[in-house]
Length: 179
Image 1 (cartoon, rainbow, N blue to C red):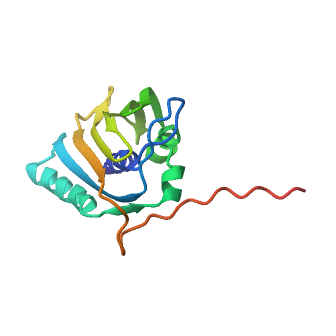
Image 2 (cartoon, rainbow, N blue to C red):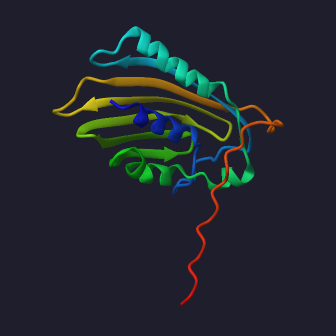
């Protein structure tokens, strides 16, 4: 199982909530902190030291707070992120998707270098907090038994602070000139 899939999935969850037919809440602009706890990290040859190293890597992300601007909040769209996941995480197909109100749950089946990987997540998602359990596991005939389970939580801590990391807002795609 590849760390890149884990990082992509965690980033997807931390990216906040977006729009769908049932209009789940978007993150409120402001200062957001996150925490990622590794519950299980298993597979052939995975040692306790590697689990500790993975937790340390996720703790580095947790130590950083992010300023979510009103513009960034307005652009968040979890539905689009799930749909685009195939291009980012290696040919994923999203199923069992439930993103409504304060609930977020989905399963994505991905192909990663000839192996099948399933990413599943469920939890709560509001305008001021997220608490989601995510499982990434090797499945199928070529499964190596790899599994990563983590709890991902994020919360709004008030207004943005000076010097806080502020991710760039994607600009709209420019319209093509008429010919």
